[in-house]
Image 1 (tube, rainbow, N blue to C red):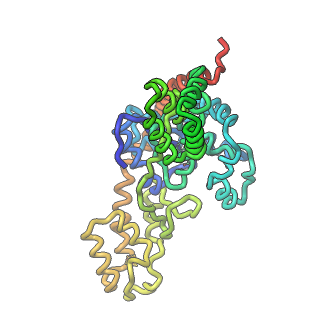
Image 2 (cartoon, helix red, strand yellow):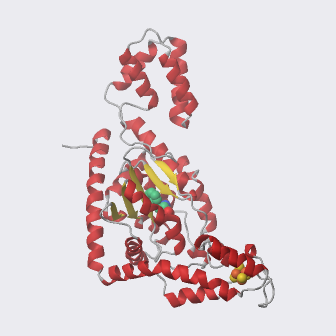
Length: 403
Ligand code: TRP
Ligand code: SF4
């Protein structure tokens, strides 16, 4: 997707302990690129972790620091990105509460992750208020910074979509100056009875269902009016689009196009499959894991030939090896001229080399927790400045300033 303008990027990750290579190749490398191009906000979604880990909250705080160390170790740079912890910016919670007042229950119930996760995660009771509100809390994370872009994986796109709808609804409900509505209604009347009712129908289709075609039709209708003033025209457009003032711009998902990163069993690398290689796992453990990886089941003995397409090791070669090595693997495997351990060695070497600087930097941060805490404090403060400013605007547009 082409990105234009100097927009804000925001993304968050739930703390889940130390990260693995899948996080690095899937998410963090993308963040590294974005932090040089945009004003980035990256945060630890510790409240979101509570939606499922509410029985064991102590584990979360440990994971928070491990994850922050991982971010810093791969090169997320506090000089260019603001790195912070969600719960240290309590304005997210205030906005969540206010949004909860104007969010129809059905909007939350129909978010696909709601039912999916409840069906998948059977060992926890997820029929809680907080779990239903998960994507609404995520919405407040996003729009409180007026973020334009939200880098997320496929599974989170529906959440960003909800935040667009909520932003639109908020602007519609609270983005109007006093008297604006009456003036717009007056202008609509001037178009004549038939056009007036068509305008209202199209406006409703757009605002309630996001029907872009209705927006186009209504705009054309307004443009075609001969006998209304420019002021009325603008009023009608503003009223159509949802009010005078855009308090929350609608964010867009930046879908991260990364092929799935394989785990040591050939499935997608994921903590829940127990097939991960930690970002800064001990080199001997990494070597062990790869040496004992399953290969093509047809290669029982060294002299049996194999097929890389049936082997999880090959998935790693596809990511890590150059053409020369890949040719060597394909030839060697199919003709049984190399053994599987031999074949795995270049993968081991490349992964260890990739991890080395990360492991070293992580150790420096782990040995100096004060530095990490300092970075986070600064990030929280900077994020909070922005969040507070937005909340002032939110309260005043809702008439909640008691001064
Ligand atoms: N729900 C996201 C995940 O599980 C984490 C998250 C929380 C997030 N708030 C966010 C991501 C805001 C992007 C923007 O991955
Ligand atoms: Fe897999 Fe390599 Fe063994 Fe072939 S030679 S089965 S690709 S590990």
